[in-house]
Every structure is written in structure tokens, then in C-alpha cells.
Image (cartoon, rainbow, N blue to C red):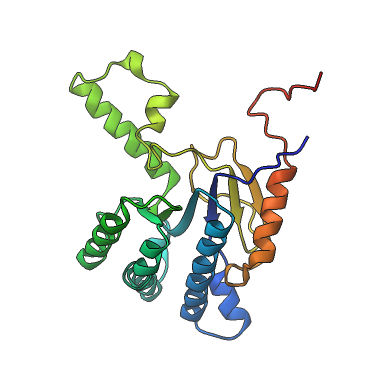
Length: 240
């Protein structure tokens, strides 16, 4: 039995920008710039295919280990995206949300985040989550800290603790978990992205490097998703 409907929520790890540039003897920055173009195209694909939510893993909490120059360049690209792309996103009714620990980010970047998210807050089109300084383990620990404070302040009791409560304190609170997880560049791991939220997510891996991700790969991912039988731990009911 196949699922004939498209996923509501797609999560993507944008991997392979550096290798794309290296294969062409180009600076890594060029690969990341091409990666922004691919992300822009993916947003439009999701709008065209009526996907409700798109989550992009732009900068992980582990990416701080990269050379300072590359980290600075990635942050500048994030700033450029928030300032130069926000008008078009707003016109397309995209609701932008930033998930992750933004405290270590520069004041300029935080101000751009606040402006972009406030501007698009009431839009009713695609919900676009961009993960900046995000890690799945951080997300879970952060939720536990919030819950612990509420218990400490007597707003909650230990007996209130359950999966729904934890989910309500995670970065995606109020949104459904991803149905489809896409990772490019041939890597077969989720790399600390949405650890809690991906318990029953369908995983699609492609060898295509992110800057080359096109409508062809997107359609392949949707076809893969529609070929899956999603049981969520149960059994599929047979037709009588």
C-alpha cells in the first residue's frame, strides 16, 4: 500500500557545498553561495507542490568547529538571506521562523532575524524553518531545562512529564514532526538534526551535492515518500 499524498513537512540537510566547489577547483564560499541558490529554488518547489512546512539545517551547533573564516562567511550568508530574500519570501506569504540558540550570534544578525520573523509572522503560506546554531541534543536538553524550571516553580509536577509535554517545549512546538527527511551528498546520517522529531520520519538520501539539487531530485524524494507505508509502530489495516 502506498501513500498517495505529499508530505506536509520536509526537513533537509543542505550538505555538499564545499565538495561541490572543491570538485570545480573553486573557493568553498562559491559552493555555499550556490547552496543559497539551491535553497531558494527548493522554497519555490515547496510552494508549487503545496508543501506546508520546510525546515532547512543551515548551521549546526557543531559548525563552530570550522575555520573562523568559513564560519564568518556562513554567518554573512545567513545575514544576506535574511535581508535580501525576505521581501520576496514575504510577497509569497512565506512565514519565516528561526530555530536554534541565537544567543551567540552577532547583534546585527539577531536584529535581522527579529525583523524578518516579525515581518512574516502573520503570513499564511509555507512555513519556512531555518535552523541556525541548532543541534538536536541541544533542543532536547533545552526542553528539559524549561520543564525542570516549571517543576521547580511548582507550575508542573513530575507526574505531568510525558512525550507531549517534551514536544511542546522543543523548537518545533506547535508544528507536526517532519514526514520526509532529505540529506544530500551521499552521507547516510541525520547529524544531530531533529533527533526527537525524526522518530518516524522517512529518510531519503541522495548522492547529489546540495548546489546541484534540482526539481528532479525533489520529485524523486516525493516519489520515495509516496512509495512508503507509514505504520508508526502499528499494522496496516487490510481492505475488507
